[in-house]
Image 1 (tube, helix red, strand yellow):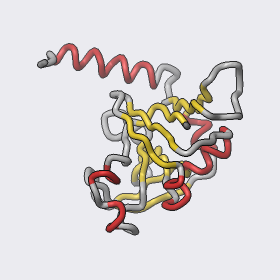
Image 2 (cartoon, rainbow, N blue to C red):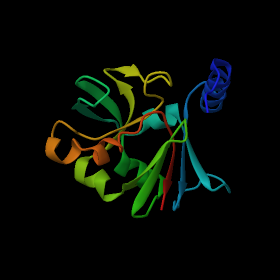
Image 3 (cartoon, helix red, strand yellow):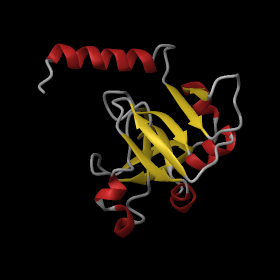
Length: 162
């Protein structure tokens, strides 16, 4: 089915408005988590809260970018702060693309949920607000496969631990 430009534009505006309603992107963490700030089933991190967490960087190329420095929070740290547990994390993008990732990957590769690329905040139109990054250049044989590349999720808005 072919979508009109107007339909695509409305969808994009809705997604951008939802994520940036407070003026900064929001990251939702759900599923098997312990540290809930309220009675909801979702732990919500604002961009300011996210940036106040310990930052880590991975310098690597992706299929979509040249070698770049991606900075954000290690997924292990996000799990620690939220009390997330489980064997898998379902990572969702703004367009509802999602992939199921083994939590063991986070420790094995030091996976970072990046908020900046080369020192500039990631925008929704350019991989943002968050981009899940693996150190592809350090592990080319393991991470240069279609299955592994599917785990490089950009426009991350939600993560559900299972």
